[in-house]
Length: 131
Image (tube, rainbow, N blue to C red; front, side, top):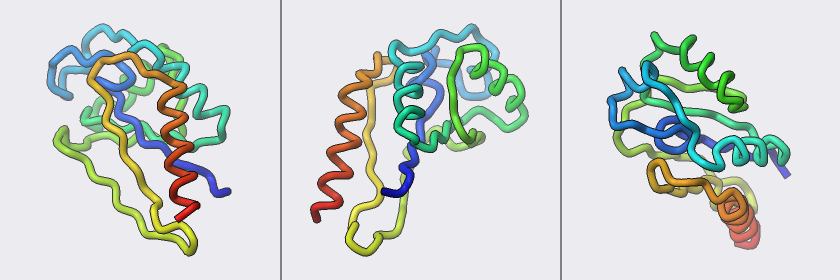
């Protein structure tokens, strides 16, 4: 099976979003969402390529990378400067695998139920390969 890729937002999914806009979010004290580190660790153990995304501006990249390190959050790639509006993932289908992209919206600042999310991911792969 080919390597899976997960795109995960930083503020509100992994780190508590305090209501400030992305341009100020990086300045304030940070607290991890419950289960955030365990979630990324579980993805890493499964060999998943982890892309963290954020609306934080590119000019605060160094500060953001330092914060992620300090909080012990692992990732493979960091994409910055995204809009804070809806995000869409488009991908092509593969022979024998008509569905190749999936989305799951989680409540802002809510604990991540690692087992539930991993089970959801596995179910998506199963249903896609059975199509």
